[in-house]
Length: 364
Image (cartoon, rainbow, N blue to C red; front, top):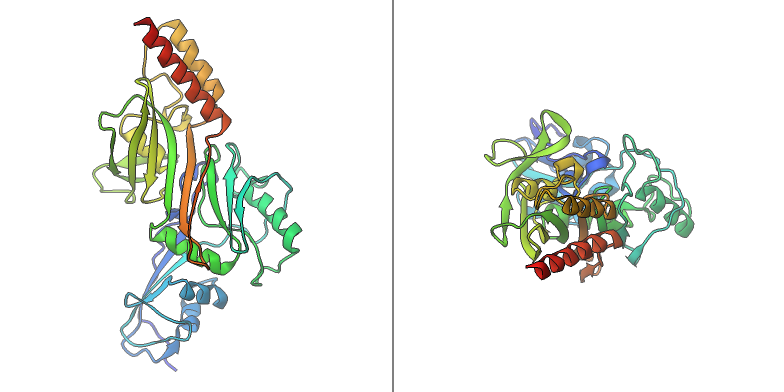
């Protein structure tokens, strides 16, 4: 049986990034393969065919991806028993496997907004890293999820189809808000496809310095790793470098010195909102990595400076919250939508600015 694929092309489109600044990640968690079969390719089951060509992937994972619609042949969805033929283009979208085969279960309080047998919605507090990585080997959200699953379902062998947590996307350590977790391989495949297709609804609330001249619009500017500083992401407005990044925004509340902005993500690049708002000239309030922890708007008077420093102490992290999340349930196909309240530090700094603005108006 001839299985040669002389035109085999494997392209890794996106790879995982560091945990310290994962930022509105979703696109960076998927792997994309494009394979063109040879003109002499004999008919062969597609799941076995792909196992021979994609490293470290199980047959079960391939079959789940096929059922989820994440494997296309010449642009069309197929069934697991489909047989490949000559001169076909096969595209495969897979979620990256965990960075480590073993994640130590560690007990922690989890704010579970919703849970069934397929998905969980977690409201993540600021300061909690999502996934173990360099500099954060444990005490992450995933460690807590592993403990929760072990207590609920017992130990699950690594290669089984049992219940275990799968991170469909990530948010920064210092970003708060809603996070979607898949509870089995099939749910992960279905949800991963929605994120890759950009059909997931995600809105964030951000407090930014100043007031945008245009109160609603779209930022369509490439972003990518800064070649001079690995921990930073930068904007590439010429489009010559980086990856396509699209953020729709609208100002919810303009307070002259700062503005409360709603950001709707069309793509999910690392640090996308933080970099896009900085590119507009309105860095996130208290975002030390992108210059938001300095006084960028207002007077130089001592009282104002002291007020801003008090605001910095109220929210000692970037003012960014993953507020809403909408998706199609992986097994029921029901449209799901979740909203969350701003955490205490975000709400507290908003109140300070509102009170200050009222005070300034009374002086006029």
